[in-house]
Image 1 (cartoon, rainbow, N blue to C red):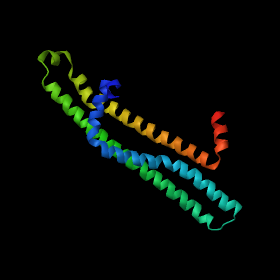
Image 2 (cartoon, rainbow, N blue to C red):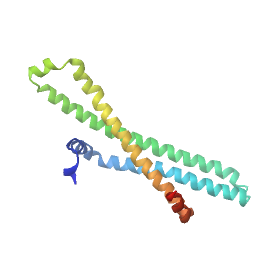
Image 3 (cartoon, helix red, strand yellow):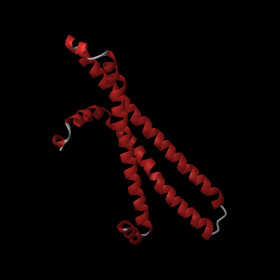
Image 4 (cartoon, one colour):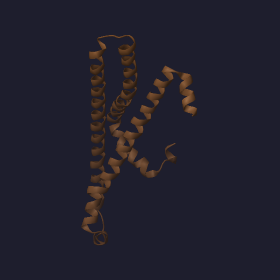
Length: 170
């Protein structure tokens, strides 16, 4: 299947291979971050049922503590996934810049005359950084939001499968 993928993406994929374990841990934290919305929905439903219908007094203290716990879990998972993805992104960026610098060192004189110093500096400072930061943010959004949708649909199915299918059809 790799033969069908764009050659630039295949090359970029090879840069990320040495960091596969760090990326895997980041994905686990992304899954934790995405699951917190489903946990919040379920928790609020249960706490509301206990507080209003069963009139349990301990719910006054437990509901805020549970929501604070879920919020802290979300924050920790989000920060850890962001830090891990940033570390991988920076490591790949350093490697790309080193290879670019190595390539520039071996340019013929005509290439130096044709390209201005500002243009070459821009390649080092801006372009590689924008490409990798955009790719990292896109990956985070793709994974986290997809898992969040799957989790929320799972909560809907768990509560009422018939209503879920009717809702999906509409």
